Amino acid sequence: MSDTSARVADSTGNWVDTRAPQWARPYLRLSRFDRPIGSWLLLMPCWWSAALASGMAHDVRGLPLTIVLFFIGAFAMRGAGCAWNDITDRDLDDKVERTRSRPLPAGQITVTQALAFLVALALLGFVVLLQFNRFAVMTGIASLLVVAIYPFMKRVTWWPQVFLGLAFSWGALMGFAVTFGRIDVTALVLYAGSIAWVIGYDTIYAHQDAEDDALIGVKSTARLFGAHTHQALILFYGVAVMLIGVALASGDARWPAWLGLAAFAAHLAWQVMRLRIDDPELCLRLFKSNKYAGLLLFAGLLADAAMRAQLS
Image (cartoon, rainbow, N blue to C red; front, side):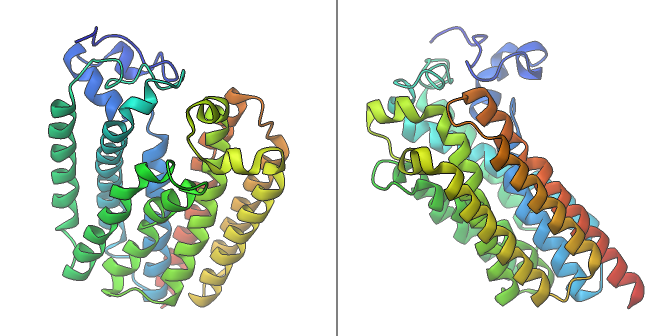
């Protein structure tokens, strides 16, 4: 076993490095609790759908608890997903400069220990899921199939970001499952819009590793689009905004939701204008900024839900 205090190359100076007990650091890094951006991005479609569905129901009484439960569930399941991803990718991660210092390829913990931690996080996520109705529980469990196959997709397709989108956007269905006990057309359109958003932001993220990925034969939309990434982002971000707009129209959203969507769209446009694919640090900053894009949309949806509930 290597030194458990050793830091991950692309995540240093955070609370895990400075405050967490040394024995816990590899597990917190494995689950990305030292850099929770992925958990926030997983959470955004959950919160979008919860707010939109509550607005459609003209009832926000259960929304605060749903928001809290989705928050806990997203962080737990993102951690479990990262553990699974690192278990399956440990040999590839050892060949990439940015990832070879992660706990598994660095030898800070064993695969058995990582699996045990994965199970613990998954159980926490399951406990959260059990707070909802039976349809929502089954909908949540169904997402595990996509989560399980995602890490292998970069080996077989140039479009692994699509499969990430299928997994990370599942929350767009969950809000409707929790609120109505069903998934309707509005939920499916919101889900599709979120998938397009994920493809866009994860393409930006993947440009950090494009050179190493080419050397080891890992596929990604960053490598596929290459110099045409800006045009691809305009397409996918544009589709995301359009489909989310269709979902808002289908759900009879009021002006606050549309204002949130406009702010979301403006943020995505800013990302495209700023992006330089040969600047890994900028790619990472722009990728992380999608948390704020998602929160802008959520704020609009939340205000819309509160307005509709008050007027009903």
